[in-house]
Amino acid sequence: MKYSNLVLIGFMGTGKSTVGLALSGKLGWSFVDVDAKIEEKEGRTIPEMFAQNGEAYFRQVETAVIADIMQQNRQIVSMGGGAVLAAGNRARMSSNGLVIALSASVETIIERVRADQNRPLLQGNLEERVASLMEQRKNAYDFADIHINTDNMPVQDIVAAILKAGGWGGE
Ligand code: S3P
Image 1 (cartoon, rainbow, N blue to C red):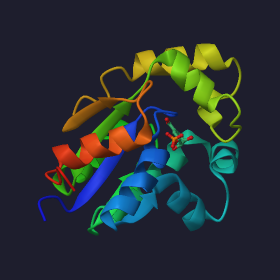
Image 2: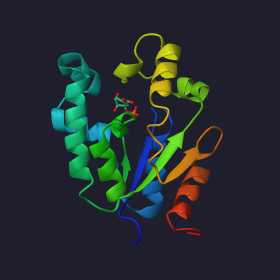
Image 3: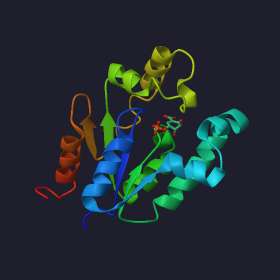
């Protein structure tokens, strides 16, 4: 097998979990959601972690969870949107996986995340928060091996593009 893991990165609302689950079904590899692992490890939700201990603490746990996950193989890993901010996390993703960056327009992202209260970084004025975070992170996903814009692209087509890029073309 050419790649040991498929790693999905991208801003909040770019479709990492949806695409990851579909890929997992296709390849028969396990689906691992980093945010869910963090919540499992801590026994509390991400908004609770931010409120009680702050973002820096959340980032420490995130790094520990990523280090653990990236030692294993045959997984589709869905990263949190900010997981790419630490160089050590990026190195672990690239050294043991094919890294796929999903992107979407600011309008698509706002539409997808609007109903969700579970993202502490987007509380307040949603339009402003998304625009300013996207600006801050505009180059954060550049290190990926593959880039896919998910605006108006059906999940099956995204999955097919990733499988083809990963060398599973035609399956
Ligand atoms: C974050 C994204 C979230 C979650 C946390 C912080 C970020 O994950 O890890 O709220 O910094 O972009 P999703 O991208 O899965 O929403």
